[in-house]
Figure 1 (cartoon, rainbow, N blue to C red):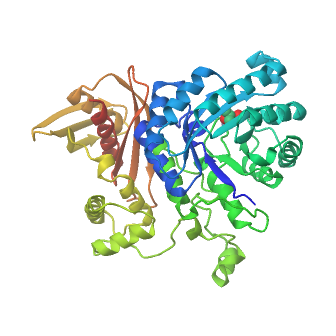
Figure 2: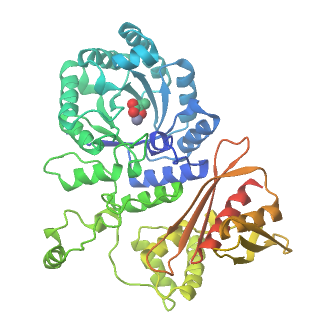
Figure 3: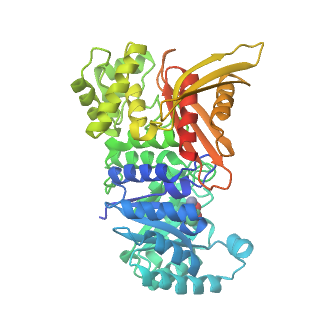
Length: 503
Ligand code: KIV
Ligand code: ZN
């Protein structure tokens, strides 16, 4: 029985959804995390869609070594040329070509007949095959296509050289029973179906993405397309962490689970949420704050007597550590390092030292430092956060509910000189940003995103600020991050961090 492959499309289907865009550095960071997670394929983007997408697919293909890297392409020569140019540096390049096969899409979107779709499939899959052996063919809107016609298209794609056949539920319309039946039907009716991987790609419009993907596996699919945290168009795609843990937790039902290192799920999920400036719903399976919490007395009693009474998987199996040792100002470097190691981080000596220094500073502000605080410190390690051109020297804000807020900000320049200015604004953050703009006079930009999240609980929690700036004429958004127990300071640091990159 073939092991199910995980095809991660966080950087393509996930990233193209509103509010989830990432810049090149962020995409590379996610790609490295996916490689460590041991996904089989990373869909790094849609190379033809923009120069930025091309560049990021190429950089990921050139960097990642332990899994295949794919680019999406419509069935036309320009798309396929660009896609191959972008992925050719991969250790195992994959071209992912697609065309719609439902009556609705063929008539209104493509304005093509069935015969034209078949002809295009034959010609262009063969064209892609000239470039590389690893070809995935997707029949867009497959679940609303005529099964007999879909089987003809799939048969044509296999004859032309496709090695993976993907059956997307593009609009999240199908049901588990239908998805299973469709995969079984195709495997039965298409010649040589046993020579390829059948794949499922489910959208979550009815909340059925994971269920439909699992049903596809029971029908014979050996690849699941999914995204970290279920990001994706509209209601998102199948969530990687949920579908993988379902297979791992029920080996009696799913006998060929993927090779994913599940102990990296939590950190990878956090990384992606952090990059897009979101936090999971409390009850989000696997990674939500309540996913392993037992509040009611009956449940607590049961769990204390035997965890399995109310826990079907352990938090440790997804990388959540439940060690109650709390670090504080008396903790030494060894304890600190050991804790980070338990949390799943492998840092270089330099990064470790940098985090340890920040930890000591934090200990002066907070009595005890939790795992959530430590994770935030790691996310803000030097290479991400350190500003060199302008450092925050000090700030003074005055905010009330009767007058406009004012902020005076003093910055230290790289040569040691200090500059100071003040501004008013709609609240202390706005006032501080206005003061910084007066001081630095940065290139014209708009603030596309500003978020501040509490890292853990309590009034003295660290605040993690994220800003995303859009510079006039640039495609990629520029991100900046700041971390402090003072939320105005975190916001200032995040803004300076982003400005640093555009000046
Ligand atoms: O949802 C979809 O149909 C897709 C295809 C391009 C694979 O994302
Ligand atoms: Zn999709």
